Length: 481
Image (cartoon, rainbow, N blue to C red; front, side):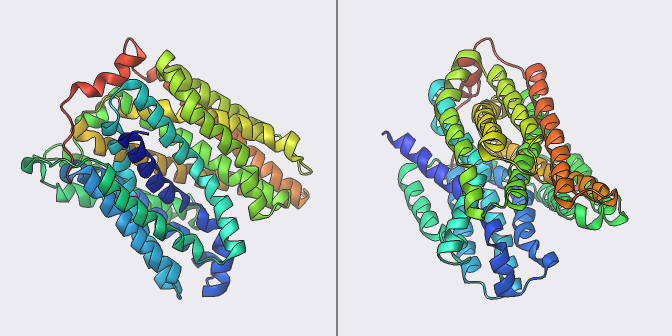
């Protein structure tokens, strides 16, 4: 195995550690609540504190990588994430744990925002790049469900502290191997100018938007508080755009977001993340609350989808991209996922795994495994290397915001439908399942819309090779040691 592929494994390991932490803690929440005395409402902050800073710092982290070196920022992000994980694992109070989770989100955002850029710069040959992006796509798409399985194992075998402490050896190994395997290049001094006003406004806007979204169901989507938060977030975003149009060294050159493939891929990313988050969380709830699965059994139920996703991402998807370009496999994968979501919309109260769950998992594994690789390639295809960190931060932000908003909307729809049916006298379990059905149908609509947009709006070159090679026409990216 060559040095570049070993470096890819290290980068994917770092990305997996970060993706896992969005879900691995969910299984441990009941134990955390008992040990630290959280209320049901305050317990949500163990998750939300991480989501707030992770979503808020993605764009800034990506641009800092462009300015000061992708490898340097990746190592800094992993180091911060690892140290914060240690403090999470040692936490003995509510405030200590929530604060450590907040810092964890910052480190995760920085590392995630530049990892895609590092992979794009490592692999310039189209076939290798397609395969590498397929592997990363599997890590990103499959990491959430792997987290449920690992969280169940660690919590049952040891205790909740280990869902955080397990990151320590992994983080240390990633830092050491990154220093040994990834090449470092020096950024030009003229590039090291940070747009402070832009950084403050966009980070504040994203944090406030995520905060409004994750609290939308609790505060009420039409409440004055939620509307005010979203309005201020929109105003800050408007101020950011105004600043970027006038500052000499913008945090986000507006020309990047005007690129057709960048804009289109991010719209697709928002819709697909909304559908995917809906699949993962709603199907897990169905398995636990309706079929009575334990957390470990839920993780095992996702295993077929993960295995299929891995095989498609690392083998099939790359070959499809090389033969047909990004549009056909992207649209086909998203439509396959939409079919899987629709199958879940018919899962009954007395469901059977092999009849009512497994077929959906297979289709969703196929769809996600095929679609992620071309989506990531499309998002980066028009971007010069010196802006690759920014583009990586933008696509990660799109996934984060789409997933958070989609999950909030779908959970609200499911709860509203269930509540309405309960009022009319429906059986509690039947009402619960029907609420999930509505949410799964809407998830399928999201995935279908993403497929249509991909088929009609993505711009492709005359051949897949030419499309993948477009960014290689630029000079090699400057990367700090």
